[in-house]
Length: 168
Image (cartoon, rainbow, N blue to C red; front, side, top):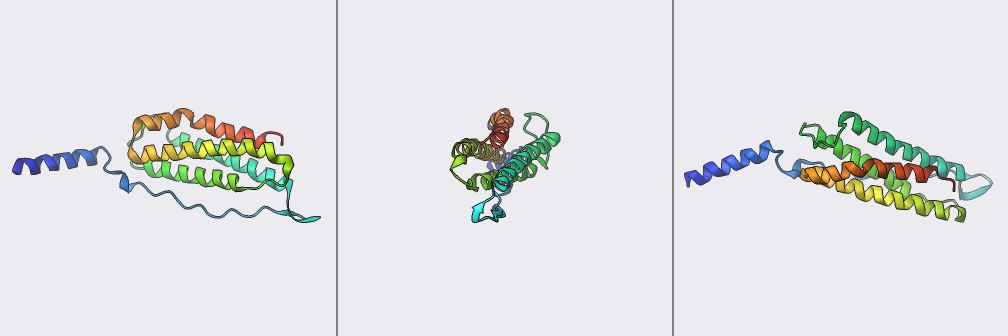
């Protein structure tokens, strides 16, 4: 019995030394409601085309900046063991998810934007899925899944930016 208790204590120490359990990882943040887009004065209730495009393009630039900020602190695909990494990654993922979801929720001003919106929404959906997978990998401390996330994150972010800046 004493040997079993000693073994249990050793395993508990080993687990905590390797990062402990995933329950200390912050839950996914709830996104704030985005501000509504301005409407056209000459057509009340119609969303401004300029405001729509500006919001999407500014938001896509925000996604790039979020990625750049995380990369500046954690520049390679190493799964960082620093205490700050996990909450920093959770914050990055949450801000990315909220920004991408707000972009996805915007309705196009009219039918001229159908193809534009379809392409952008596809890129956003891929980024959202990819970001959640990365967040889950960090939560679970899964190094190989984190590397999978790392390998493709820049391409996913770039795809959103390119779709947002495409000509409608």
